[in-house]
Image (cartoon, rainbow, N blue to C red; front, side):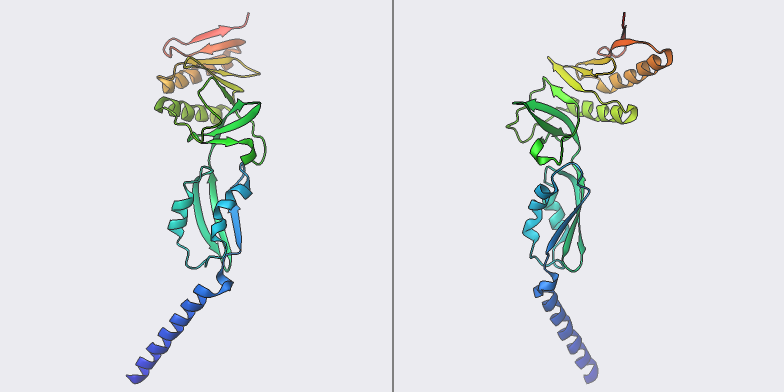
Length: 234
């Protein structure tokens, strides 16, 4: 019985000593920050938000607490923290999805799906995206709030672009009426944002007819979605 008690005491002492060592040992202090999944944004800019973890003990950092804090960064949609022992903190990042550009004072600024605004200095390089014109945006804003209809338009547009591999050069807002303009094909007139899902559905059908009949088209107007207009070039 005494031997068992002695073994237990020794194990407790070893456990306490090991915990004490891992907590205070510089061997487990974070020296390196690694990012994965960063393609659009400046890695140094993002990693600057993780620099507070340099010197912290990598064993005792709480994964959930770190991820909850960093998910609020405008550069990320999702982020996961993992450890590369003994001293490297690894962050896997799903970047915010950039969707539009706009021009102010001869400079490009960028918008993501959540309405966050980015300067070109926050990106690795210039990214070619549709230029949005006529929509109320200020470069001095940090974020804009899209209406529900605008959010639906953005979602439908992303699906349309991904499916058809056709990115508009410009998206024109004129008194809340929307037109997609392309350099090498016909314009697409959506009108107002109401019934935007139906308008995209009708657009797909019209597009298929254009391709099947090899029409030379000037513009497609789906502003009245149940009465689409196909204007041919003369």
